[in-house]
Image (cartoon, rainbow, N blue to C red; front, top):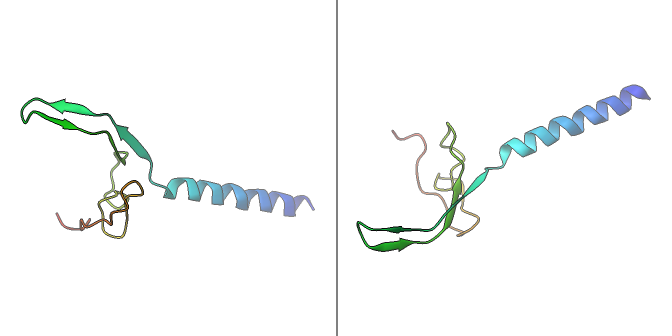
Length: 78
């Protein structure tokens, strides 16, 4: 019985780790005024900076949940 409980706890723990790492984290970008072009830039959201291009909203296969737009950037093109 202890083995079954331990095994089920382990499976739940590993699945929780996997699911939390798959989701792209978001960062809120504050609004600002750009003096050079005399334009106001509205607040927005972006994916948090990391070393991969595969989880960005603009990457092909992904979409921006805030705007509904599909990604168009090829992550493998340098």
